[in-house]
Amino acid sequence: MLSIQHLNVEFSGKLAVRDTGFSVQPGESFGLVGESGSGKSTILRTVMGLNANWNGSITVDGVDVRKAPRKQLAKVVQMVFQDPYSSLHPRYVIGQQIAEPMKINGIANPERRTAELLELIGLGARFQFRFPHELSGGQRQRVAIARALALSPKLLLLDEPTSALDVSIQAEILNLLNRLRKELGLTFVIVSHDLAVISYMCERLMVMRNAQPVETLTREQLRSGAIAEDYTKALIAAA
Amino acid sequence: MSALVEIENLRVAFRNDEGGYNDAVRGVTLSLGREKLGIVGESGSGKSLTGRALLGVLPPYARISVDKMQFDGIDLKSATPKLRRSLRGGRMGMILQDPKFSLNPVMTIGKQIVEAIRIGDRRISGGDARKKALGILEAVHIREPERVFNLYPHELSGGMGQRVMIGMMVVREPDLLIADEPTSALDVTVRTQVLSILDELVTRRGMGLIFISHDLNLVSKFCDRVIVMYAGRIVESIEASRLSEATHPYTRGLLSCLPQIDGSLEPLPVLNRDASWAGAA
Image (cartoon, rainbow over all chains, first blue to last red; front, top):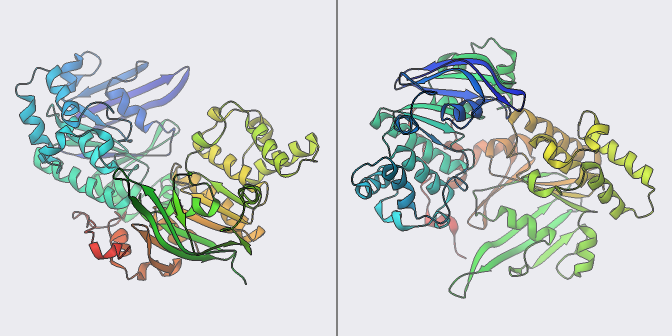
């Protein structure tokens, strides 16, 4: 579903991601772990076309990200950001924000689909006339997820989807994401600094440090402690 | 040992749209010795407001009432604004969650720390203040303090910024430090460092620490005692080491909704909030 090879991303002369690659199978959930500045979010943003200065190859569902038109890419892959307080437009009602990608892409009947999406993520259609400031953090993150699902993508990139939320709300969002993955057959790439979240959500994970991958583990390896690198061990000990 | 802080029946309310008042903190009673006290709860549970009320930095439109509020024998309830201002920074410090918003963006790190030192000691010479500032940077484990001294806040990473904040607060050697989510914005590896600095200060300088956080695991490992707040009230107060034996359903719910590295893959239990937890106002 997602294949990244020899990716280098540069910010003003400094490499933020160095020779990194991994691939994610359809239906799989893949985790990226590491401290801030390790390049994990940069990878997601590059897949979405939000960084210009990169080389290497990225294909999503067989399509070369560099060559694919923006609109075609948007129908395959979507992203959910960390902070639900800054990722929604403060002056648009919820319904408008979810319908906007559908209107841009000329999808018929966006109003009905918006209502369906709001039901799907557990808020209900009556929320479509509310403004973001009327919603709690967890509700906003649900809206961000609904908007990401508007174009029925196959791959969702989740950048710290719950780290701005209370633990009780985190549990609700993680359960929602797992349910959506099962029901809609989605593929996930999840960035998190919380190994417990990754272990709960992902079948495989890659640990990153200083712009480079440290190692790739399966969930079983993580849980049984079959870990080669000291850095990963230190991360687990600190968690 | 007499208590460093004593609060009895603290209530904080804010005016709502209908002209009435909504209680945000409803009758909090606590006492703190020279120890690490954790306050946990979700957003809106009143944990930060409790800390701010103690410091005296709530906005003027907040309605505060308290039966007793003492800090090291000083009655804060009847204290003049002037007295409270002199306590802040000197004897009571506060560390906020995000160093990006709590440091002056157009002033170098060194200048800000020197400023804090000179407010406390107006007779200190420029050279001595500088030496002291460099010393505190070293104490909070900043490598190359000489270089960092001349940097602006935006040139620091989050972890460094937070350590600078801590340095600036402890350079005056306060008796009480209120840390409001001091590590939420930090990576796990940096978090461990910041916590060990705080721990050192409590044990070595005999400081009292109020550690406000939503992270139960962290608090249970780091603090001596934990207070769990829900809807403006204390629902449970327990030794940190015995947090796993907590009995209140809210505390139990918070503990069980955390995913574990080797935990079950079944859907996580979610909190079913019981109206009775909030209790009578």
